[in-house]
Length: 409
Image 1 (cartoon, helix red, strand yellow):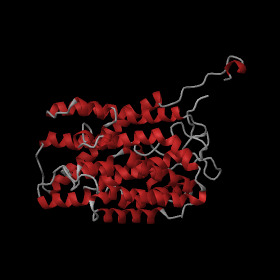
Image 2 (cartoon, one colour; image 1 turned 90 degrees about the vertical axis):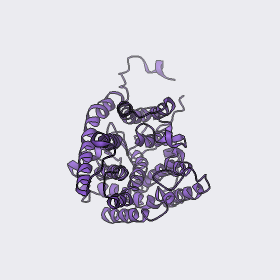
Image 3 (cartoon, helix red, strand yellow; image 1 turned 180 degrees about the vertical axis):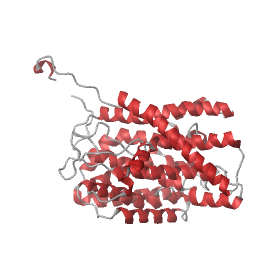
Image 4 (tube, one colour; image 1 turned 135 degrees about the horizontal axis):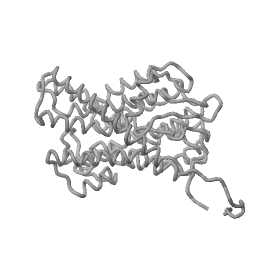
């Protein structure tokens, strides 16, 4: 008898969509099992995913030196350099939330892992190849060990800047997602055992652990200091990149999904939750970097995700459910995987050290944003979707042609 876990008990019926997606990698259409929730699509969360990806985009824009005016460049850095931290945090919490909300009844773990591999890895492999070609074009060097660790999604496990920033730097987050997916069947089973009336306590403990991470990081070596933040390789890696540490964000998403599904949500509206998230962003700009990376915005992000899901479940009005916003959300993983390449190598094409006046820099930013959307649409259309269809679906079971007792075992 197989010891492989199934995703049970589940809140979602077996007629869930063929590809119940999540976070960085997926859209979030789901079909909950209760009559009141059947057929619900979490399109507001899909729309929010694009905003999270755009935050990461502007974070990298702020680091690219487009502004010739030093004051404008400093202002862009001060406002947007940390935006990527909140964008990635959103994706990690969202992963746990959506995977739990859309878990399939009696879905063998191997099918779940196959879908996640099909959704994540082809985009990574294609962008890895493209990046290696671009690096060869501009004469950038990367060691075989660094390139291999990146290709195998091991680089975020190594507390060394040259590894976790190698090849396509944004791919470090996929190392975390891979660990999330590997653990999910067991995490879901464990969190399902928490009584419904204790779920908010579980969420509070989880948030407390996230706040404890930067406190522990203060004990780590403080040198060498990174070029973009006054923290060391070790501190930045432990707080922001270390896959086992980021599992805390993922688990918070699982607990939140159970809170919503169990009817324990506090009914905070989407608009107030959005305002709270903006306030959290402003506070994040003011606190020390180790606390800004994850802890400061954890509660606002968690409330925003749950509020958006509850709004869709209850069919309340949401501007995020428009067709364009949903499409942008659907390509957001591809956008995330391609935008850094568009910014970095697009800048190189225009002049590696070139900068512009404020209107020119804003115009170049708009061109890079449009180029990132175009690149994402192509990657989504010609890589993500067809390979998900080809290898992401479980094999069809042929009708039985032998007596049942011959196959019992």
